[in-house]
Image (cartoon, rainbow, N blue to C red):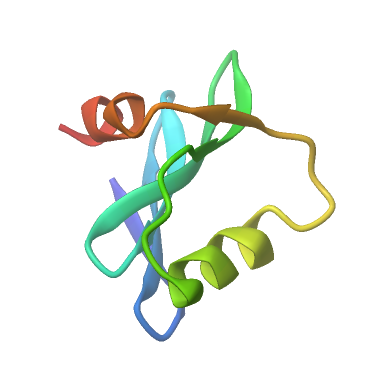
Length: 75
């Protein structure tokens, strides 16, 4: 597992062969899942977290998924 600081209160965790996951504060909110593509949570957390997600997925096509799927991805 590799952790990359993207900015204040946002990191990307790389799980080799599985996914790249954006965490805003301590919550997984978006990801690139191998074999599936880009995804983001269907849950609203805050204006700042929404900004983190929008910057991370800027210009990309993505699917909106249940928060529980992102939680399971990193558990």
